[in-house]
Length: 145
Image (cartoon, rainbow, N blue to C red):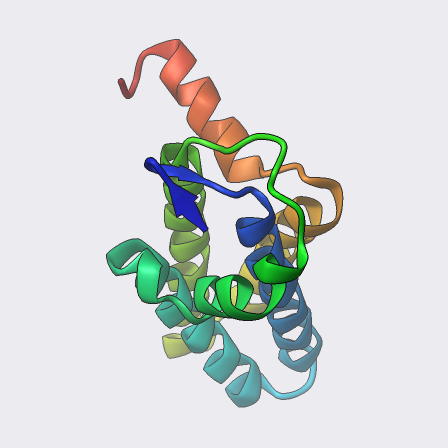
């Protein structure tokens, strides 16, 4: 849910929980069935792209707003969406790494799924957004404004 260009942090955490499940399945499948794992990594790439192109229509956000948010109290605080967007870009980069690796039959699907899982799991279950922290570090250093 977005208000005044700020985001209820529980929405991205909900999406991260779904992403962690999908990426864990992709990781597991990559150990035995590369083609199924590849399909899931491609789906993750589509979902990351969707979150960047049209976050208001993304199925994770829609599901959160429709089914979960109405049952919750108002959030204690809202978040700036820029770090979250950067985190999605990092997730997309890892998904693209897995997609390219799958094209060339490299074990990058396994690595990609593992990194996506770790980042999504930490966000979903501990509220630690690695991409957001990376955004803040890069901004502090002055690489981005």
